[in-house]
Length: 115
Image (cartoon, rainbow, N blue to C red; front, side):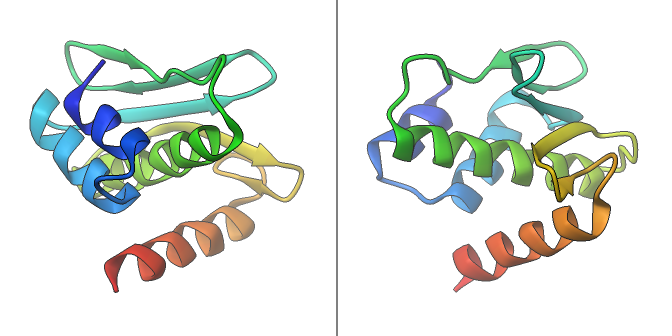
């Protein structure tokens, strides 16, 4: 497991810090996938796939991983990858079908952790 994910799950760093650290660790995030329907919880770069340890995670850990996937999607876009994967968080929050809810959630996370 990547150092950034271990630090996040232990509570030593917040989700935004983990996103930046993971981006540096793997040489740039290119996309992210969070799809409970298919069981895909992954972050990608151009040569690697990082599986997020969601199965067996406690509720707070799963929430932190969901936030990490959301901010990884945002970071992939900032890195110039406009097809940065898919994040499905619920009926009104998805990077594919419910972009307004997803963008609002992403902005909320950025504001929360930037402070």
